[in-house]
Image (tube, rainbow, N blue to C red; front, top):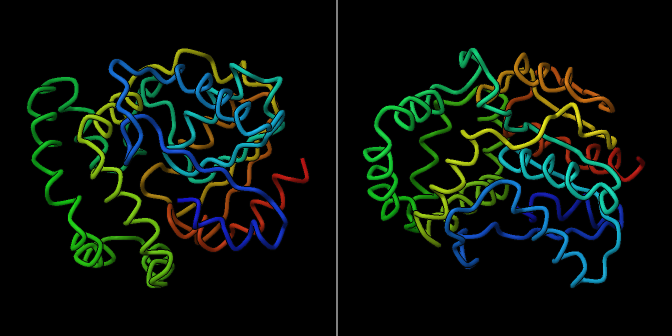
Length: 251
């Protein structure tokens, strides 16, 4: 996923560090992993690299991890940018603003967890194949027009779907652990994240409705929200990355 930011980062002379979470790709699986385990990992990585303070750019599922890190080690984090960010699902009373696939997974996670786990394991051989990226082009027909148009750029398409394939290639357990974390309470209040946050969200985002994103921004004490017309979940980071990154480093 770091490749999605590479061109803009080089223009702006920004160093991008893009670690895999435990159990993803070549990273060692961590049993019973919780969201609040991540900030310590991020802090250890930063110290190992000699980085005292840093900013966090989080796209989609990276949002909970960014918020957790900003909350738990605020002395190391300068600011956070959330782009097409996942929301605290456990806090939602209404799931209508989520992608139907996510609603389906939430239902199975609550009522048929063993079956859901079996489906994840069954999916791994298919998604981890190199041919998955090529066959995934069919998904474009089901996406909002902004996302479909942005992903016709082969380089962007390759980055996004290859990252999914490589995640599954590591282990199904790592992907399942991530999915479970998204559905669980995060372990802290968004109201207590008082570092500067820049939240970017497309008004055509179908994964997480911009109305749900507005609920998140209302809870953050130090947040500037940028809702972008005619952009979706994928097109927003693809088309606006330089703007997003420049805004983040200016904080």
